[in-house]
Length: 496
Image 1 (cartoon, rainbow, N blue to C red):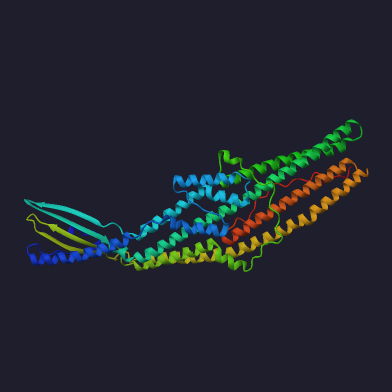
Image 2 (cartoon, one colour):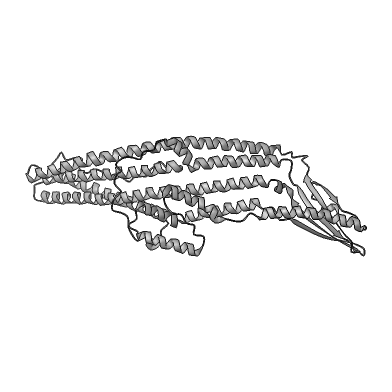
């Protein structure tokens, strides 16, 4: 073979038998035949990897079923997209519960569908990593006077073949890490949707009670205007009632804007548009459970279940695999095995094989190894910190959920019953002409404000409960959005 065909920068040895002796020529064909067998086995090994997108998606679907008890589907074809659209329409045909909202979000949100494509990309990368590069074929023809010679060579990168086991393990780890990341995105989206549903329902309840306060304040202001006109009310008393009415109008406007914002955020998480945005929500939040959830071995369970912890550990494992691959191929870069052949102008043929590799004269690979070792230590530190943060976050989420339950129960069993009892007693006093109508209206406004506080407390509990659920399986967003609090317009009744 012509030495000019040897790879640049590599030591290449070629063996080509003489073309003039038949016995030597027959022996020469045996050597490339053996090499061809080796190449065929290597190619078959690389070609055995096949794409399995459904297998890559199934672990994510199983995690969704396990942690949020909802179905997960990938709309990879127009037919599948049409099927999901019909399911979403069926769910939107009735008032949307929290579980239904989560199901709609998991099926309909295009951002999640885009994330599912990451699984297909990772699966393709896995298969690509398991396949050998295509063999290279070089053809050449030389002419010297009347003499012509045709040469060919077939070569394959042996360094990738030798590193195939390490690449297979690294590719599997990379796929699992992508699966964990997509699963965390799915579960986080489900948690955000549940919290947005809680806020939207609570906001609608708040608007209803704000309207009741507004009606009571408007009635008081109108009565004060008439009594002032009749000479039975002074300007201070009328100004006070008018101030109550103005505060109630502001509170109603704020509550309506908060209700619109909460609903629109839920709509975005559901991925709805057009006529779908006219979905209905329940009239009130679910009741407070009798007791908060008991979670024994809270931290241990969180460390075992949290996807961010598992992802950090998988990243460390993947880095360790890459470190081993870097060490294994430190001095074995650029290995190539090839077949070569030639045919002279007189019809004689010759063939042989060649083997090439890089000479580690200037780059012994120690820098690549040092970089891989530092990356591995970095991954270990990050995995440890993720575990430490997970322990703290789950403790914080549990404390917030327990405190929110205590506050909501206090509102339900103490504050609201007391306000109701006061209202009943004041009604009796009003019937007995012991108090006037303005005292009765002021007490009604105070009772409505107490009910609004109970709604907020119940909302905060369900938000804290969603945060705790997320803290057990992934990184939560512990800061919960709070709707504006209604001012109590009945705070000052000394003038009545």
